[in-house]
Image (cartoon, rainbow, N blue to C red; front, side, top):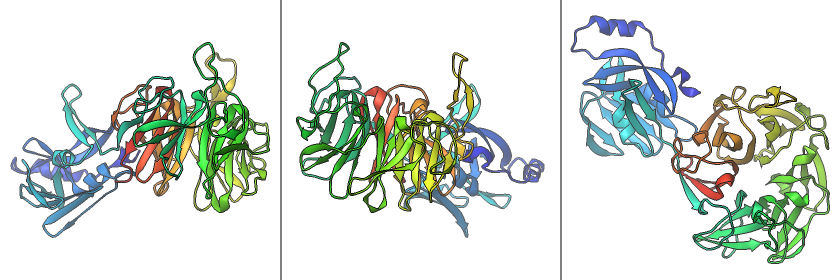
Length: 477
């Protein structure tokens, strides 16, 4: 992770200050927990406060979600973290925050040729950030700004109910479609419905519940026809074409369905539990044909073609599109340059298809024994960091946002973010165990997040195990 080597200055700096009188700030290497990770930084202790040099401050607060910049001009130091700008006057307790003068209990000052600024002051004036002292561990605990996680729709219990107090049953994905009275469309998988959340009210958009099994779950069926009479079976994902057509991966019916002008029809092709859809350039729809272990395309004319993988064969192999192997891919996103990103769920990695070549874009492929010790299977894990060192555990939904790829890392109970510029993976939100908790990204909890969808600077998450749709806001500030 980026904080591993935040600041390492020449050790003689510490020695110089050890030889100077007590009036000179003490500079020392100290341990600090940043977003749960132990990190060593060089800090100056002034009046019991921790000061860090401006370069260290930039490194601490800069990440793919909240960018930070800083520098020194004359007798002033500047630091921008997201939308918050700090201007420090050397040896002055007055600090300007977005132009407003604020009095700090300790001043920024020059130490060994570098400008040191108060860490607590910065953190306390950043939205969604927190700093504290752990008396037991005797370490500073710092959490940098993170998007806020809240519930967009659903009460956290499975079932079926419409209105403001809606109930969902294992919602798998979310997407949106322009149209009068339409908001966010939710693929309510175990209710076999497509739902519409608009102005805080949830209604039935397509499909019907006509029978329940012994456990109270909706039974899936297959029927084309008008929206209110069409029937689905464990629908998994949706995507919208340029002409407004809505495509549904109707997984248990092994079909891709099309909603147009109030009518549901079916593409004439045999799929095997398709679970993810994404449109690419030129109006082509790409399909993660999960149990066929391949990626397919649907042309604007409705012709279906194999894009990558070997039909019916699973495994892990990079190479040309026709020789590559996948294992139950369940997520897909297409970049503007035509690169197809695939959540290769069974292999616990993110793959990329570009120019007819399949590569591993992020994640680590590891083979091990299953929990019974009988069979060798790909093993998932968790690690942030460089692309080839990061680990995922059953990644599913994918979404593109500016220069990042967002991943619903389902079995890790986290939402992850892959930064293209820096070639790193980091956790956007989620504490790593299943629960239903809102708040800042570092304290929020999910239960089997499966779908992600970006609209503006808001990320919507199908929090499948919690039977709700969550909202992460804002992205990119």
